[in-house]
Image 1 (cartoon, rainbow, N blue to C red):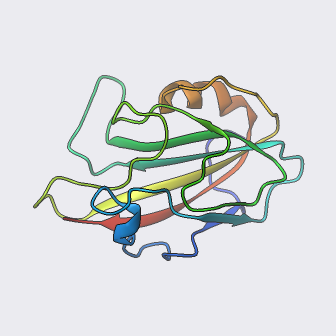
Image 2: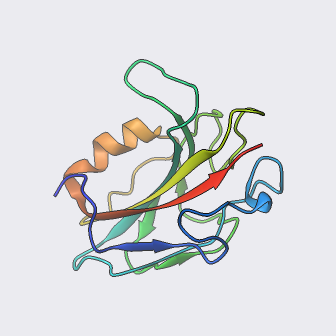
Amino acid sequence: MGFALSELQLKCPVFESGSVIPKRYTGEGEDISPPMEWTDVPEGTKSFVLICHDPDAPLVLPGTYGFVHWVLYNIPGEITALPEGVKEHTNGINDFNNEGYNGPMPPAGHGTHHYFFWLLALNEQLNLEPGLTLWQLLERVEPHVTGMNRLVGKYKR
């Protein structure tokens, strides 16, 4: 299938797509991951990947753009929700050079940034090692993506 939107639906109980992410889930708040829920899972899904990326960040590196806030994978296919501050599953490396979630904290005065939370459904449980970057992860999972969708939150300082 590759990377194309599908019927998979990603929702967050604490903010609607297109609305402001509550401060609690940002670098100015408690900096914990927001709860996530999903429905309309493609048949045959064995695992999920969840990422958060800010394409508005003023950072361009060779072969990439924006800023990665969260890389979470090896989420079993029977899971359809994550609690806030999730500790389970496997964390990759974000652009803060940390494993796990680091929430929105755009430069002061830089305007509103958009945070894309992407959920990918995979047809395999790949059991990938911890510490992959977003780009390493995408290279490994792309042949196994059977569905994907996004939720967009906004934040500014």
